[in-house]
Image (cartoon, rainbow, N blue to C red; front, side, top):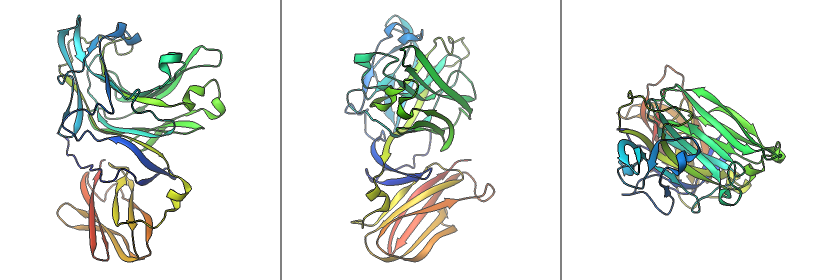
Length: 353
């Protein structure tokens, strides 16, 4: 079981990544007792293999999707149900939450095995009126079988109406949790794994018929079994298999006012970003009044590792960079502790190597 350390205390805050400021506008932390139906709808059935010759029957049963220890757990089972030999779950935010541009990310641990096909992706909200691929599809993360590469892809209709797709792969360890993300604006869509970019697709001025990527998209999470791409299970995969989702978050670019900041109303230590990190992360904090500030990093035994800030600061919003050399720290949980005029706040940081 993964140690859960990501606690969301503020629904609106500013983070900095790749020289841009992002403001959290929506998330599902999967902290409730059950799946939030204000965010998600289940797609059920087999729908003629979902266009991919898939073998599973999707259900809305807790046997196939539920909240466990603060995570969404999608479970694929080998069982006879609905005329199929496998069941799983497919969830979407269509009609409830859709987004045009921004940073969309999820922290996920995927299953492995011949015939497995987990995905974190988007479709154009207008799919019911224009169909696929005219609606556009952004595959933030797809993985099949036991491969040590993960895929990032777009599917769309070109200017002449014909189908096209573009994408690439990057190597990774599929047995671990990873942060999968895109950063999407009017010029491009850029893919990341654990904050490292690996693919960029250009959409500026709807080049090559990419106007579908200038419209709102909704988010999907699913775990398929079999199909054209992975092939069918061959008996080597041990069911059940699970796709574990710690959170899904969506950010928008902060406005100029939010970037420069106004005087905060209270004293805050903002969760570092990215988290988990390696080798660098940004820690933000807000001061409602001028104070002498210290910002220090400790291990979980209370040993001080590094002082990032130790100076007098006027009221405002600040970001501090924390970076390490590969030999300095081992993977694990660390603490950022902020002291401003005797008021103390702390946040957990996760270093993953």
